[in-house]
Length: 295
Ligand code: NDP
Image (tube, rainbow, N blue to C red; front, side, top):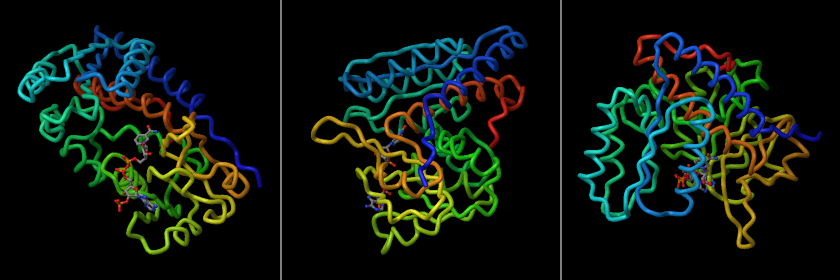
């Protein structure tokens, strides 16, 4: 078997065009355009690239982008006061504060200061609780992107799908497991204390891997015909970026597999924009976007 290579760039473009349509429909109805504020503190090179890409994609779907770049020496109280201003700003529907933050600022203080209604990263405890209880909320972008990528392979219905999530982090593994559970998948979460990770992975129809360990998942770990979503981003000594899955080996057994780069990564920003549209619609009492994602 040669696995279908799931084209995350193409799927993200499709998502962006649906969000663009949603933005036009919103502005026709409401008379304003949804807005996303991006806050960057300091000069971390990777964070600068992430924020630049987010700002570019925000504008490309027709939303307003508010960019706030603060110096490395910014105090926690200065950042919290900016967050307060953005919470109160009626033009701002979504707020993202790029992580990591400099050492003098406690990330959890900032995350919990963002209004849950504008928390388009889905990191506020109110949204974490809503997603864990399966009652809505704003969903963290990376697991939402994984769900959208996997959905067509199960006809949009995850009920009874044997799913294994590798990793239990708050930003990927746990919300991923909760999203699948809410859709009645049978979910196993494995992590670094799991005795035999491979034996769990082998029995899965769907495997989502977010471990941060290059090439961890080998071909003989994966069951014939599984769908494998690779969240990992690992930079090797030679500068090459690879995922947590051994792509060549797993391609020989899986039904479908995401590459790294070009798989989950592009969907993450797409879902940030989708969440901003969702937040804008909810703020105006217009419900959730109806853009046929099949989830
Ligand atoms: P964390 O380091 O927070 O969590 C990693 C998880 O994987 C932990 O639960 C850890 O277990 C588990 N783990 C680590 N090694 C193994 C192993 N050998 N076997 C089984 N489980 C293991 O990472 P994140 O969740 O934040 O990120 C994971 C990866 O995804 C990273 O490469 C990151 O760069 C990437 N990423 C990509 C994004 C994208 O947009 N494409 C977005 C976010 C992350 P334990 O808890 O026991 O330590």
